[in-house]
Length: 94
Image 1 (cartoon, rainbow, N blue to C red):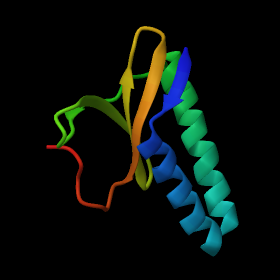
Image 2: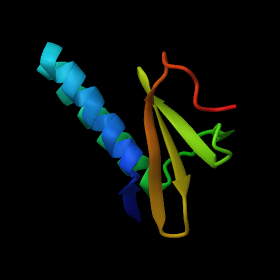
Image 3: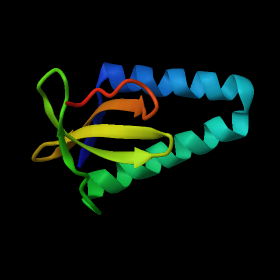
């Protein structure tokens, strides 16, 4: 299955890694490993997160990678990572 990161998800991940990397590079590296492993497992269909509606109206599923949450959509042969959003921020779901 092909994995695609929406531009917003790429930006979310880069911002998180830059923020953490400036304070603790080991934590940033661990977050990157956790996110990529979770996305790989989601793409393989190992499990499915609960369905949610974003404030934009888009229907997505999500799964936590503490302290972040991965929002994604599954297509026939692809997994689209929509956002990687810190759970302490203002919710992006209704």
